[in-house]
Image (cartoon, rainbow, N blue to C red; front, side, top):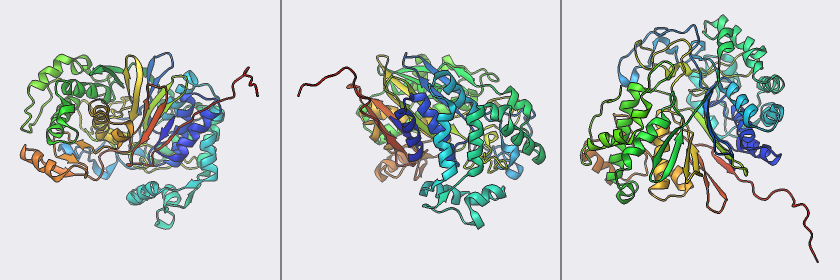
Length: 533
């Protein structure tokens, strides 16, 4: 089963598995393909997290998040605000657009490391579908066309990128063909040279030369020193299930575990999905998690993150005792915030028992809106994830990893896979993943219903509700002290795979992206079997 947020990326992964590859081979092929067909979301100059469960039951978190360049420093941007909602605003939007917004890329290193350690096929075979899509072109979807239209002004920062995606100032329309010959050549270099094409080769030289010419920070020293980190997952329990997710600098493993620990003390099933009681409880739990997250969750090499305290059942009991089921509250951290919405996620499982759940991004829509000349590579704007103020957990420091809300989650029952899921959506990622988990475990939903179900979100301000929640529920929540905001879409397109008792797989993708599950059944002919006619 291959589930991605674009049909051609799902096709690429499926093609690899049909050729004999495993889930890791297929996942990496899908990621390369997504870098072509979802250029607004993902690229070799991005970063991400891969959660891999091998057939032997071992879990690996491959952290290839971006890092602040070695020349970066805490006051490299001029801050314009101290308010929570606007604290990342800087003079000239330098942490959003242009070369000064770019962090040291990790995606290519992470994809190639996963393939080298756990895959079975040559890199050239894995990259081949992506090269084909870039060289021959593909049909622009309405989703991609809308993304281009939404940021056509920002794309004007780079005339080469603007000419590609909005020729003559007119965004590519759905149904038009997008061809990327420069990027096809870069992918061919990667297929031949591996990650050294970027970190010690011609693609890296093109990147650093462009940085130097434009006043960016990424140098060859940064590329030389970049390292992928293999981390152990955070493991929590919820109603007899094991819930595994990535550790800091990702928020998801710690704070999903924290929230589930608190919820475990309530009859969530009895409250009913979508009821005022359930939504109120979710809102209070979300606010608690965000209060603790803002104070303590960052790169563990730079910040002492109190993981064991945050995920303990005792701490959940302490927090639960302070919740008022009839009144909204403000919460503060007891253990001693903005990201981009524009990520992508894939979930893959093979017949041998290998599973991959991975979230990847170039951060904002089309990253820093800068395309490295003659390479087709789009620069990330990961520096936006740092707090541009000095003296905070998320402040900028040389070599520091960006923090993230990415939530490539896996849930086990009796040490057997039950389901895996993930999604894009910045600060709304791990709260949405948590809601899908309780949709399945507490509310008995199918994996398809769970990923598509309406979502809620708050980090202490307005309580956002998707349109499917009734006005009656919204009014009841308002009466409890919540300030209600209606949102057309909370977070992005979630996709998931469930592992059924009969050994079959069910794949699901929701309406919020171009999600496409592709399943493979059957197999090669049996040998040594005779039939009497």
